[in-house]
Image (cartoon, rainbow, N blue to C red; front, side, top):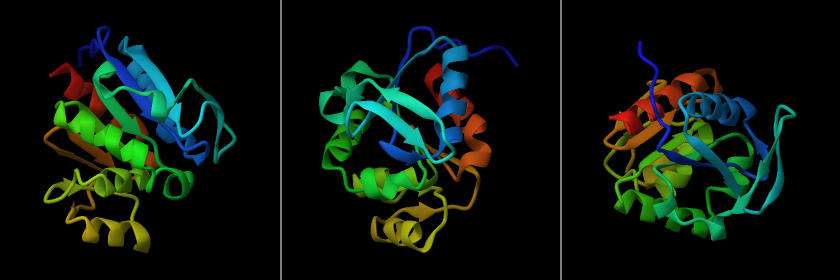
Length: 179
């Protein structure tokens, strides 16, 4: 398979400031970087964010500083920190709606899919999520057609079920950006 060229692409990855799932950030980030994309990490606040598996990343932007038009894709990372820090974040929801309106590629893995659902972007769409009682209820309330496939692509929305498909999730987003 030929190498995907994303050298002209800018990708924003959004993490919770604590308890993001390490693989869901680092594996797609590596896919994007290897393809030549510029990857920026943002969170609800700037500074060091800590993953649930012990990894850390510097969030160089707060969500309030982000402009959707600066990026070709926005990827929301899951993990146990997503419900507490990302699901109800109105700044993130507005950013996601702005990006969707502009036709940007939007991705969410694991529990992060609920952020897209709460932003009103997945109603009537097929999407997957790490399946907990709470996440499935959120999808039901938002009118999402929940799917158990590991990765689901519906138009320019890419969702993935969890860390075991993090690399493939990154590859699916890269393919969307390259098409």
